[in-house]
Amino acid sequence: MTIRRLPETLVNRIAAGEVIERPAAAVKELVENAIDAGATRVSATLTEAGRAAIVVADDGKGMTADELDLAVERHATSKLPGEDLLAIRTLGFRGEALPSIGAVARLTLTSRARGADAAWAIRVEGGRKCAPEPAAHPPGTRVEVRDLFYATPARLKFLKGERAERDACEDAIARLAMAHPEIAFELVADGRATLKLPPASRLDRVAAVVGKEFLGSAVDVRAVREDEAGTIRLDGHAGLPTYNRATGQHQYLFVNGRPVRDKLLAGAVRGAYADFLARDRHPVVALFLTLPTDLVDANVHPAKTEVRFRDPARIRGLIVASLKEALDRAGFRAATSVAVEALDLARARIAPPPAQYGFAAPPSTRGGAALELSDANFAYHAPLAPSAPPQAPPPMATQTADLPLGVARAQVHETYIVAQTKDGIVIVDQHAAHERLVYERMKEALAAGGVKRQALLIPEIVELGEKEAAGLLARADELAELGLTLESFGPGAVAVRETPAMLGDVDVKGLLRDLADEIAEHGAALSLKERLGEVCGTMACHGSVRAGRRLSGPEMDALLRQMEATPHSGQCNHGRPTYVELKLADIEKLFGRR
Image (cartoon, rainbow, N blue to C red; front, side, top):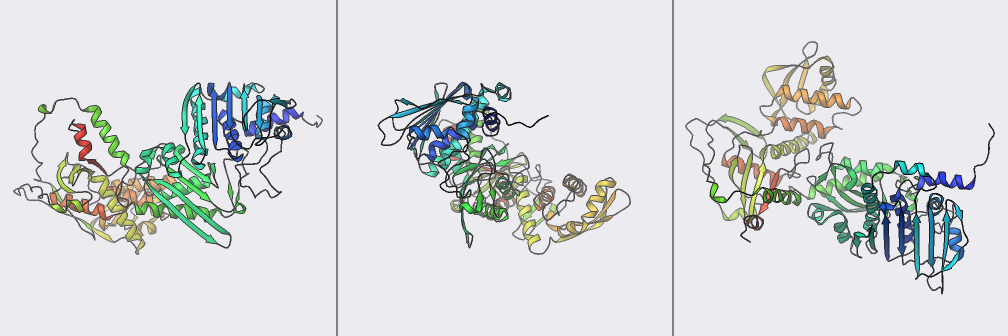
């Protein structure tokens, strides 16, 4: 077999496979070119999700006939002023987008430079270029792509359905629009306008793309780090943990105005939320990172969706610290979308007339266990005497205006606390709320030198299996710092002698089985301190007030006050809300009073 040089058309088609893998990639490249050309308006039109046609028009600076001829050549660019590959202040310069599109589709560029008397057009079909011709066009550029992948029909087989491809195109434009709020964007798909974004402030543009409910469920992120290498700035918005999604699709990350899907940045976001979300849930964020161009390489990926930082640890540390600080400022807030969803469900299910309902008597505390909640500790006490009368709800006082979570009025189904606020009601999941409180106190105690232990009168023997028991015993010293003391008790068995004092009367067997599963799943790659979120969360879950436990009025109020004083108490350790707040005005609308 002899070595031969591939034809230019085949070389372009190979390059196109790296750059233009689907219609959304072509749309992204063309819109980026329009932004770099100084456009104030960019419109995109799709036919059959871009398979049949893609048209992107702008009012940018336009091109002359000679520039058009050069624009469709490989490795030609106007975006690199010198020869420094790191001095990139545009959205990209790889110089492969237009020739790559022309290699696999029928490409027509029509452009008129600002101040020029005439426009010019050039066509490229399957890699074959025609000479520029005079044309009629206002100042700016219009790029028309027809029959995408007609020259490489095998690529069509790998495209997704029309809906998925159209959504991908819209997402690509929306991300660019979020990074450039001063530009107007429009997307028309098969004759229907699916995206219309006028010029706006960054805050309004974020709301237009992510949704207005996001701003009510997010905290501002602002951070600046300066040293001899330069200034790094991070700003944007981070959704509260209770405002989460099933995938990371709704994480909008930008580096120097360029939307990216970078593993380092996504990992940093996930690390910042590790204490608040279950592994299968993802936060919603819109973060804008700005740094000197010599600290980041924007050309490590053909599609320019990934970047490489000179000091990745510094970038990760900045993102994690800034997000945690912003979430700390949120206090016990939960996402406003939680209340909206609750009201929507209520509206959908209200059908029986009010006359069918009666008033239920308050639940009796007879035989229930009392729980005292103090600033220092959570301790279980003996059950109330059988003859103890039910405690009446505390009288409503004027100080409820100063109590964000109000005053407890009732316990429903021995699981939910109903509290009255100045202008509405709050419903609290007692187990989820207490789980977060215990978890936060475990972290504080560990940071202060270790979790206090309580000795068991009789050591509890737990049968686990040899592999699970060995995994726990290998981490015995680390577990002791968390307040759990255990030792071997024969093959496959563990003896527990001390448990964390703040957990009270804990289910030792259930706790050890869950911890053994946590350790077995993760292996020995990280220490338990590095896995603090999962381990403490597991312990807190087993030591919390369980659903089905009756609480007295003072106990319920004590839980509410602790929530108000504890950061992140608006969500449990898995990102679920611990309370729902319903305003009186919304409740009145629900019953037709407004």
